Length: 394
Ligand SMILES: *Cc1c(COP(=O)(O)O)cnc(C)c1O
Image (cartoon, rainbow, N blue to C red; front, top):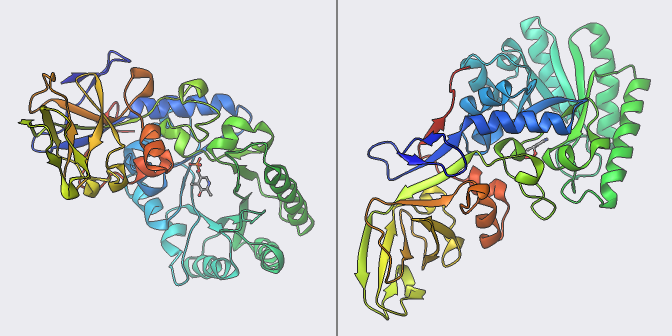
């Protein structure tokens, strides 16, 4: 069993027979949610747990978020919401990205609230409500300038008009109205203020149509941490729940009171002596410059290690930082451990973990491969078992 240097809590090793695992610290998720509530004390908090909780594991992460004080959960896809309900999670739950033809009856039967951004989705929600004799509880998703999911212009007017009528009929209840920023990670960007003004205008427009939702929400992680004027009734952080900074140029996780929840660890599969001048891995894009030791890490792009991390991804072995030597393959990559290394097969290799503990971070990987920390944790492959530290049950 390895010990985490930043705390006294022992972390579980990879399960026997698995070359790697993602250790997920559920206590960190709870603590991050509590910290986020501190940043937005006047708002409710919806923990966004879409995409398998950004790769951290849907149900255990959702429960950890609720223990930390989240009052809502948010997912993109309806099957994710139904999986939470099947696991016995009863918190208010919103699902916001749908396709025509999707049957909303299971959503209504399971008390899942629906994000509505199109007239067809409103029609389908109403069909499901009438079919089941229930009321569809919805949040109207408006596009205030992101130019992505959300209703605007004539569609928005049509949705507001229908929703008002359906609400009087009792077949629909508009619980929320929400939108999403294009530049939340650049709080000074002029679109931020413009989107807020547009949002407030739409809330007033809705009120004139007789729709007065109890929760207005606009803030993702970045706006939760950097823009209190956008908190409204509820904030919707995702990436920060998992301890990653949504604004790495403006602040580290620590600076916001957050801690990375996932450690991606493997174990050296072999360590072998290599002569100088040896090409390493496919295409020999790396060549040893001296007699050295090569350590083999049994993780590859199938496990979510970006192939673009070839020659740039940071990995820690025995407290020392190395860089991926040569190409990342499907199942494995190589480290040049240097001639003096005492590393042996079986030693732990940390791809990313807790920055405050001196480990490489998901943010370091993101910077190395020119992407965002969100993608690094979310892409960790299904083949990598998630091992939970902390209370797994509700
Ligand atoms: C993913 C998502 C969020 C969470 O965004 P983060 O940047 O991870 O905090 C919030 N709202 C909507 C609509 C989303 O799609």
